[in-house]
Amino acid sequence: MSNLSDYLEWRGDLSFEQSPFNKCDALLFSLVSYIDFKEIVPESVSEKIKWSSAAEKLTALSDFEQRKQLGQMINDNTVDIFLKASRYPRFNNLFISKYEAILDEEKKEQFSAVTIDVGKTACVVFRGTDDTLVGWHEDFNLVNLDAIPSQVDADRYFSEVCAYQKKSRGNIVIIGHSKGGHLAVDTAKRAEKSYKKLIQDVYNFDGPGFPKEYFEQREYLAVAPKIHSFYPEFSIVGMIFEHTDGYEIVKSSELAVMQHDPLSWQIKAASFENADSFRDESIFFYNALNGWIARLDTEQRKSLVESLFSVLYASGAKTNTDLDHDKLSNMRRMLSAYMELDSDTKVEIHKIIMLLKQSVKVTLPMFNLFSFAD
Image 1 (cartoon, rainbow, N blue to C red):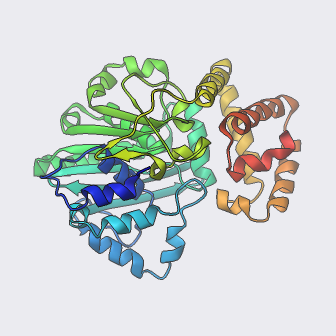
Image 2: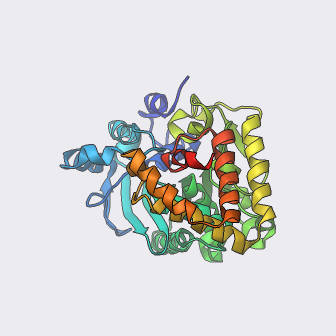
């Protein structure tokens, strides 16, 4: 089975003039967004660094090995793929700019983006959920907020790139994996009319969806033909809320929820190996989770999300990786916080944890440490 690493060997020596930008390039860019480019990639859209130069600077950093560790749900080979791409003519002379990363515990926001130029086309790439509990908290807030903080910053970021692109007469492609895919679609929909004209394509890789009425809005319909969505056979993140037809289902070399990993997606030439349908477990999760969401009103969902994360934060951990250290102590602190919740809240938290454990077969510490709720 072949993945992005093989794709680099097949297409890496071909320029974009010889082989135009495609969905596999977009998937690679979505992975690049997870890398910590602080003090490497300029914060301004007008100041740029070559891909190859960014790779050299990254490997020269004293904390390079630390930056390679991206957390529980992000493949350890992500940085290696970026470095491998830097050795191929297709990618090494591309320019990267406008790296931005926000982690705000008070606002419950985790946002990051980077822009990669392919000729005159600027590819705006939004990062998905990282290892932080704040990032996961913001994801859960999708069920009870009209707009999460990342959506607001994604709009601002995109507008700043658009203003620059209008001056240089270039187009824009918007890309994202996981929450980044959700932001890519939503940013295209929210964009003002003059900026919508700059959008060439939108690539959504296993991003959470939206309420059904979202797809009936005029602003969405204006960009719908440009949106390309892709989900693995065992999709969990992508099963949150609704999606429109026209997506591709991609085969993966991984099992269960780990199919969310882009490096597990199967590639043939410059396209994906497609599956005929989602796995039964994925369909079950879609029906069960969205049924649970529909049964509760907004205030109930908000209260449950806050209660769930109050238990997680009681551990003192900041990330899933932190939770995996000293598990016994973390579980004790979480249990103490859990016991302070009212009985109705405990019942609902138990339902959602059991749904995640049974249908998703999760391996994340933030859910596994809830064994006391079994």
